[in-house]
Length: 117
Image (cartoon, rainbow, N blue to C red):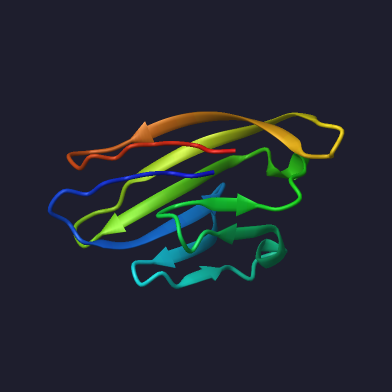
């Protein structure tokens, strides 16, 4: 899942990803990524080092049917975008198809949203 955002007159600090209210990981403005040691997060999730905000899910299962949050933060404030992921079926290659529902919350900064599969 990929989010795109642009800030006007603010300095990017970090972006956090969550499933439910549990932190998956953080990508700092320096590019350093850390995945929480919770459950099997380090084997199941990754955060792209090259994209501004891309959460990668490996070996998707029914347990991944949840609300995922992306929380970009600047030196001034934090925004939250949530995507509800629904598992709707499997292909013959055992790849899962996902449906995304987004509830975008933003204030004065321009924040755009895009999901890639």
